[in-house]
Length: 507
Ligand SMILES: Cc1ncc(COP(=O)(O)O)c(C=O)c1O
Image 1 (cartoon, rainbow, N blue to C red):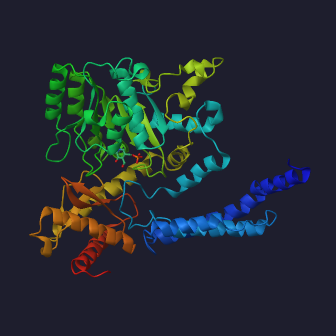
Image 2: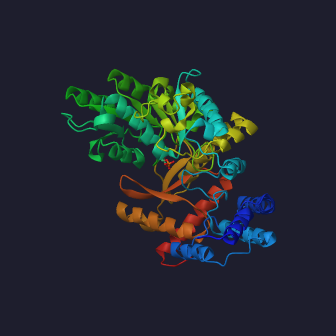
Image 3: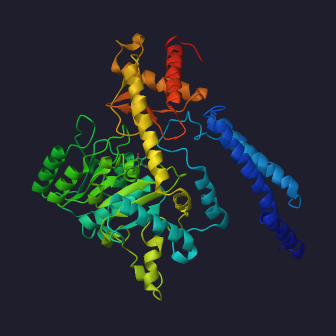
């Protein structure tokens, strides 16, 4: 049994955690710390990735959990400890704002977006139903309308939502496709069908598509990959042949999944031709534009996504090429009537029968999530501050760097460009003269070892991939502060680490 004194002490501790004065003190230090950090990191002063063994990081994080708590009445001490924790987080974290970060499809985000997102976190504005997050809902709806029109759809003719990432976005879109293509699938599952349905996908589709097939009960072995052309784009003629065969056998097709652009090398599919084939066979076209959807906002690169408006569903990640902090991913349905198809069990009016019109705004009817983080404040605020021009600039600058990097690779006899880039994703290999006669396997293994050595050095951050089963280096130029000089230095660093690796030295 708790006594009155226990409760009073508990209330005192709680009051300290909620104290607006402490918040102000800690917050002022936080802003100073973050600003200094950005200045340093953007000037490439220090390691990109402060590599440490994961177990060492976990042990250090755990040691803070076990630390002696402070006296909740000591505001100054609490603010000091808060600043120490922030300093530690900054010291141990990855520095995506360093221009030598040329890594995954995760950007050096616009810093102010993080502050706008923090408003949602500090005041806790989760969504599910409109009245829990009224402004979060408003921001999301306004963005859906703006971005959908950039895709090319008429105002108010389409629907969309924000979800926690591109993988969940693909799952949501394909769930709607499945429920439309296979009558009764939501209620009865897929049992009892004479022929198992298939999902027809780009040969290099992101793994979240295969996962979605597993989750949807279609089955990963029912995922059919369409052959690619010489630039690793979906070949519409092969798509036509495959769909004709499937239709002739009477086999159900859940959807065709095209890419704008593909993950491995950033290839943009010929959407108008693919849309023609899909229409001919009356198949749902889903376009995974998680990375390349932002080309819509650039007059210079819009042609890459010509035909996107003909897709039945589109996924577009704001935490990729809209340069937002993770996670914020959009799903669009060209036909507004499909907006409640993914999750059919709740008729909209059931949420609040007294206000049926409001159910339109309840995100929980359309997303996997019930409680959903308010993920769109950053994009809403940055768009409101800088307008769409900023996003066009970010696409133009990073896509141009992709082309410049490719030209540098072509000019370097010890490097091999795997493809001509269509955007800011460039795949390549370092093949010094010692490896010219090596097997492709050995060349591939060398790239992977080289990449690990490079990122652990803290000098640059790039990633690796496999193309046709052979290891390669992969750069996504997704920090707009990267310059051509940084790219020259990257090649020099790869050469240096590569030669050290070949000569067995640890650099
Ligand atoms: C084309 C494509 N689709 C989907 C995804 C998955 O997105 P997320 O990491 O937000 O789940 C990725 C991730 O890189 C991607 O490249």
